[in-house]
Length: 108
Length: 146
Image (spheres, chains in turn brown, green):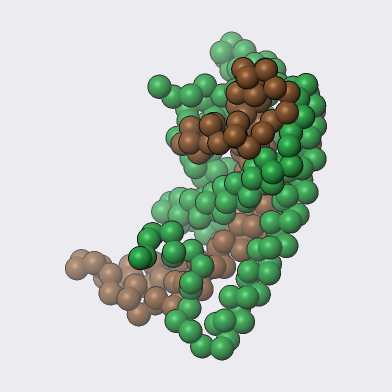
């Protein structure tokens, strides 16, 4: 069976993304507190808290994310290989990847 | 001319400490990107070998960068879903939902998740899907939605 990504690595990437977002939210805090016309103070406070609070991820969620990323890499290679094979070449070149990229990104 | 893509990097509104933090974050990102690239390189070469093809270096680098961007996007999506559900921690279901663009992909992930949970697939269809899944990686690519 092929190897998979390291769940810890994926977790680190997620944490990076989440902390980036949290910093952004902190910067915009004044604006966020406005809320919609009907929002009560309590809802607004909860929304802000939820946004500021650092997210955590489940261990099994991390494993499924690893699987998803693995599928992404495998798909990319397989689709590019298909194109290369159709041309009769056995090295996967950037032009092959280019051809499959749009549909690949739409599918993922 | 400004485009939507410019948003990603510029965060704070200036100031010394903001810049420092930004640089730190970028360094961290670069480190993670390198680690990911190593994993992708080994995965890619073994997968290409299974297909009987060689893969050129720029292609691997490109796939590694794409994978990093996908991981970032996944993190954002998954955080939004969890927040939307009023939860503070991300669930398996959140991750599966983030693959909603391709039904087949979502099915594969659900099967994987079921296996993790240790449940026995009870219907014939699920069992067939599981058997297909193991072959699927090597032979067919994922179906594309029409």
